[in-house]
Every structure is written in structure tokens, then in C-alpha cells.
Length: 165
Image (cartoon, rainbow, N blue to C red):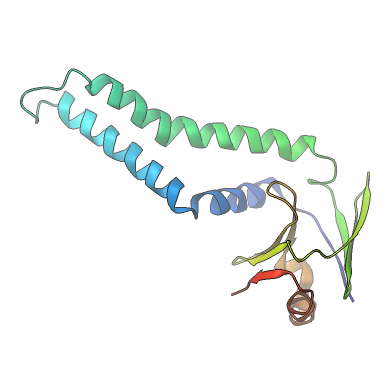
């Protein structure tokens, strides 16, 4: 059994969320397309392209929307969700054993058995267990301390899908 407590800071949470979102090829391509349309519009406005494109204003707004507005919207939504969700910004105690996980915060507690559909993914400073598309456990590696090898072994033996480093 591995037991520990952790508290997630908003700065670390938002870094992790953006890392999860922007690791997908589609998000990278959309951002690259936004940068491309923004650069095209600027080149057009500077008069480096002949003849000038009358749609350059639309490209400029599309580029700004993709490169600036979309990340700002994601940041705002995740910031709002971080502070509204019970337990996410509070100290959480975890207990992992061979068949189940228990978590308890100041306002809630939860216990469930592992499901083979869960995905355990390891990042530089985190383990993330995806229960559903939007429900996950976020576990900082620093909270595990010297229990890190035991936790990794427990996850390997759990029957969940693993993406470990």
C-alpha cells in the first residue's frame, strides 16, 4: 500500500493541463495554422505581397483568435474550474493498494476499485490517472517521495493501461 498527501497549486495545475492539451498533434497543428495566418496577414499589411489580399483582415482576426484568445479562454475556464471543484485546490490524502484507490479531502472522500479502462500516464513531475475523459487523479511525484518505486510497481500490477516513462 502507498499512502501520501498532496496539495496542487494552481500554477502547477495549469502547466499540466496545457501540457496535456498541447501534446496532441491536432492542437499543435491548429496553433501552427493560427501563427501562419497571423504572419500572412502581417506580411500582407506591410505590403510585401502583391497584390494585397482583401481577406487579410479576416486572417489577422483568425490568427489572433487561435494564438491568443483560445489559450486565454482555456486558462480562464480551467482557473474557474480549479477553484470551484471541491477538493482540487485542497490538501488531498491518497491511499493506493493492489485493488483500489481511496482519496479524501477536507470536503469529500472517495473510494473505488481499479478499472482496466483507466489510463495511467507519467509526466516529468506528475502521475495522472484518467478515470474518464474529464475525471482524473493528479499525483505530484514529489508527494510520493521515496514511495515512487512502490507506486510505479503498484500501477504496473493494477491492470490499468500504462504510459510510463
